[in-house]
Length: 536
Image 1 (cartoon, rainbow, N blue to C red):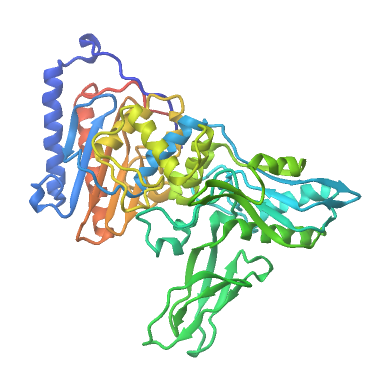
Image 2 (cartoon, one colour):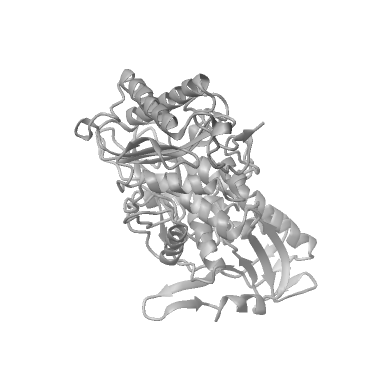
């Protein structure tokens, strides 16, 4: 991935830029005609009258630093943005927390006497979304170590080196530093919450608050399916998936809680293919503590007693209250001995996973941490209110833009192409722009664009994608030459085409823009100028 520097557009100087503003605007008009011709040649209906356009569109293409649009189609229309909303939330956390910010997870206790802990082992969550086997820095794919509990094993080794041999009073998982809330944000569906991308948001979780399941139906109806669950510490998740006949209805495969643990429930048809899915953990802090107990025992540390979860919770009548400890600070008072700790990668590396992979749970977690850092409560509503206030104070939003979550999973979020282009233009002027730009998927190379735009030159397009059942989006930056860069956003809702067909149409449109802009640059390299672009 090439590096990027802050883009600052100089004042117009006829001696340097050549053509007058009028001539430049005429050339912009010609460029729009070229774009229109490319779109029509490829049967792309975007620039046709809205009545003949499939779905509802909001589109804007501008040169960086220039508010005159090259292409615009209902740019202020408010639509569900899907995951391109993450462009706002990752900019927000970079601006509020800084690119070097890290989160710390700790193991603490009241004391240690000849290898035996005094009181419970306190597992303190710090809001680290990467207590997992994911490798850093991001190298083009979301690579993982073979051992899904590798981070917990590192903590267990630190505990052993500190002289701990016995944990007689159990483990207390402290689900901090922000309050966990029951339920999900408005606009998240029940089906969302079944899968990894709709996992509950907590301050302590492992493996992205999800487990990977492989379910193979039995040969005959009525029998249990064969399942593989990763991770599944201490066999905590029991298999209850049944095989049904080929013509019988099925129940969705999901994780459910009961009095003795979790069950993998549902049904699959005999003769069907193996089902592979990432499922959301119902109670991530408890699952993390159970996994910690397992790796401690495997390291040779005896663990007995109960596993308990403590942390901030929301009480309808009393507001925020502490469950188990009077307040978060008292955890450290009662467990003042630090025995082990794990620090996350820097935020600049964490947002690469968020934007390239489109990781919902991570950005929801870190947006709450940004809220806490500003002295607010860290609840979902407070966090998204803080995000919206931040954006409005910087003049990045117009009209009735609405943030319901930080990930874009909610169908109730509303943004326009103008909002996104304003953000991207503003972001190019910020000191954290290089880290921000490096977090975006690169066309034909990595993340959610690794299989798209392969005909474009390397580094030519950096963009965030978004996909919901009735929303497709793309927003980012086109680099035509090192000194010619453009920002764009495309939002489409309520379409009748298949998602694959519409995504292909968007790709052809952006490729058409790239070709038209490149042709204009060849004709006159100074037609559109920007101070800087990719380095190397």
